[in-house]
Amino acid sequence: MTSHFQLIAKITPKPEHMQDVRESLMGILAPTRAEAGCLKFNLLEGREGDCFYLDEEWSNDAALAAHYEKDYIKPIFAKYQNWLASPVEIHKMAALA
Image 1 (cartoon, rainbow, N blue to C red):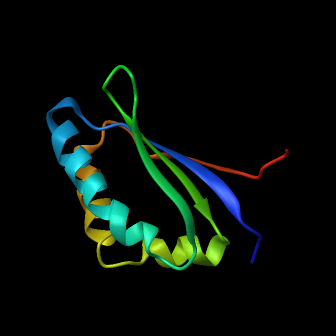
Image 2: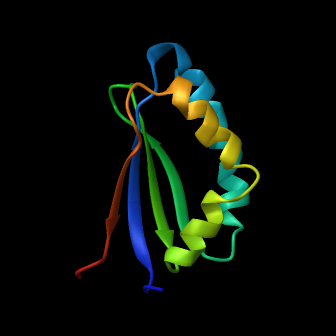
């Protein structure tokens, strides 16, 4: 198990699924923020309106793994197979300063 870390996830929907993805992400904000290991979970939209970013901070890798197993997350991941133009880009980072 590692110490806390930050994560940026870029989510690029197909144009016809922008609203579906927006609604699904809005729906997971509150329950995700309430998870014990979640330190930050913010949703942003690209200025061009063609993608979303999740700005996250987790207490450790186990907390993120537990998040991915939640009943409200798994169905979204399944829908992403049809909704997304490209796979989700996930970048895990450690703060330097």
